[in-house]
Length: 468
Image (cartoon, rainbow, N blue to C red):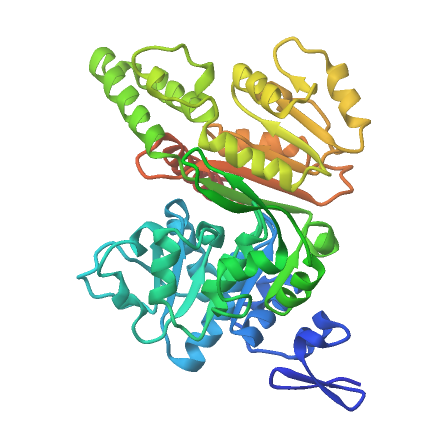
């Protein structure tokens, strides 16, 4: 019989921290909190909320699509009500509006976006993008010991960056929740940097001490003649895993498979580079100037294709300024595919040349566009895992229940077309849970943000007319 008292559990007469319980998740399930809208959460999400509330400063590492945002919101709401503190959410710029919407849904509250340091904000929920942290004057929002949520916390994986250093100096809050699907993206140094900002000296106090203990170092000589040591491999990783385990909760798709609804749709927001923004704006200005408003559809298509795959566009005085062949959206797609590489993945784009380019980058033979034989699809369906990339032509008439990950690489212009795509995978005969990811460049004034608004309006009209 287990008994919970505060952050401790009594098992067989022994008092242990919750994280040392024989069944850690069962321990968090026993310790109940009165969470707002908990009926909207999956069981594993409730466990995540209990974990954050008993740890105070911790990392929630759920894979993409598993719902870190609602877990953080209901946890922060509980603390806000019981401690009378503000909640400060720090996230990438494209996610700011999404956080406002999710706070309204899961906390029944209105959030305000910090856009002016001199303005007074009435809401207890404040949302700001990471770029603002670097600006002098931001420190006033840390006054009063707010509850801090850092979404996509890997933005701070480089402890030497201006962003990480400023956060480290400014933030001394009792409650800090870091959310990231990938706490280690390059090396164990990433996790050291996050923990340095989360719990200061919980791991080794300096990068050198951390490397001395966990790194296998090699001395190299720079062109300048200066010699430095770099890590070429790692050691004592089991020890590191044991040390971080109390403060990081990991959930993968396989671990919570049975708890997921039959269909889960997630918008993945992409933040494009300043170089891409610059070229995008030049393309838009030039075409409007030379062709006028009559060419609006052609312009929008051209801009969509630039965001998808700049290499497919004919080089001219505008696009030649873009120095890389891989767009920010492609990089996000590669991350997503790596995340679910052991699953059967379908990727859909509106454009045949984009499909071919994605096929080249992802090195898959399963492409479906134009006159490609249906045998390609049938062969794909016999595989245990793999990637099928196709145009919207493939979203008509094909039964693809064998797959369970669908990525909409770009969005069609209507909700009906989007549902048509999803319907190829999520249909009668599907025995697997289905995850749908919509990749969206959400930055304001860019085409994909506009398309998303159009889809939302059409969906709303359809529900009213059809009473659905």
